Length: 176
Image (tube, rainbow, N blue to C red; front, side, top):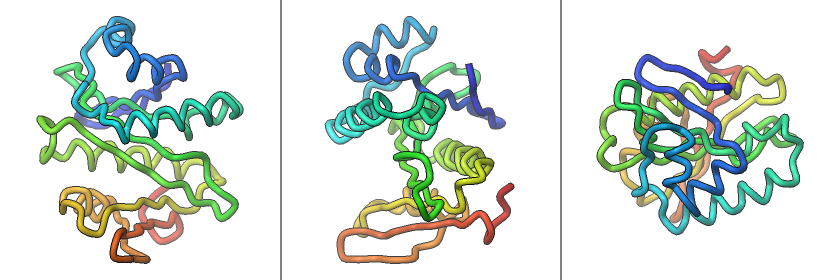
């Protein structure tokens, strides 16, 4: 099984079946993984996002599934699936891929999300097709998400009353 590692985390790309289990039968996913996963993060918007990911993955080349799926953020030492992060799809015709993420409230403000997002950006930039990573936050959103994006090197490139659009380019950064 492929996984990415940081000092404090393991990031594991969920399979199509594991995504289904996360929303339909999280206890089955926990049995398969051998450790608990956050139930708190499975909000209605996340359910819809997972349904979209499942639909896209069913039609996509399995070799591209890691670009579509969520990666489970596992806290080392606790062996707990504390959050999810992932791309909406593989890079578009401009070489851009949008990233999203979320973590259990009990694990916020510890740097885990920043660590996970940074590692996924590194992974994404290893793909020659990927020239930039983008993200979108609510303009009125919490500062926590904004700080995560700033810490990984993203900058706001567009804004409206509703949203801030963030971007980091491989060429303009410290990425591989």
